[in-house]
Image (tube, rainbow, N blue to C red; front, side, top):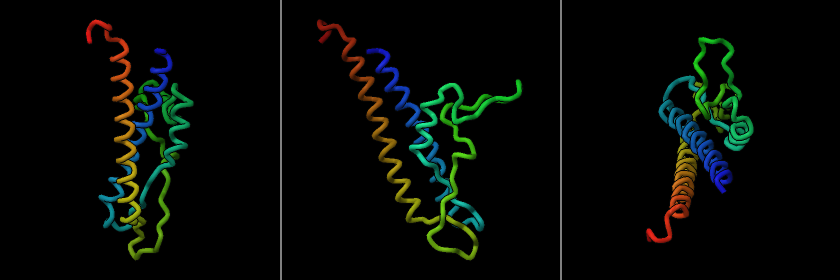
Amino acid sequence: MLNRLTDALNFQTQALTLRSERQRLLASNIANADTPGFQARDMDFSKALREATSSAASPAGLTTTQTGHIAPRAGALGESQKLYATSAQTSLDSNTVDMDRERANFADNSVKYEATLRFISGSVRTALDAMKSPNAG
């Protein structure tokens, strides 16, 4: 029971961390909508989640190769996992931010982030209820 709960929470924690990172990327795209030459970035969420959950020892495929290196934070995306968004139409300033796409992706990711938070909260609440004494009410 405890291992299943731990595995489920670890998975949801990874998902939440990646959702947060995606939200940061999308917010950066929106903030730079008027920056000439800015290239919009996004990520393949399902691929990143698969990689994050399959290699817990080395987050996002990052490793410390020298003793002075700072260890990568859990869920951190490597540059290879950040994709460049393709623009729907060309612009004179070479900016690839499509505000309609970014707003839709931001809203979708926000809803999924909130759902992941609710799932984690529900899992913890269920575990706490299961641990209560029957006499405690």
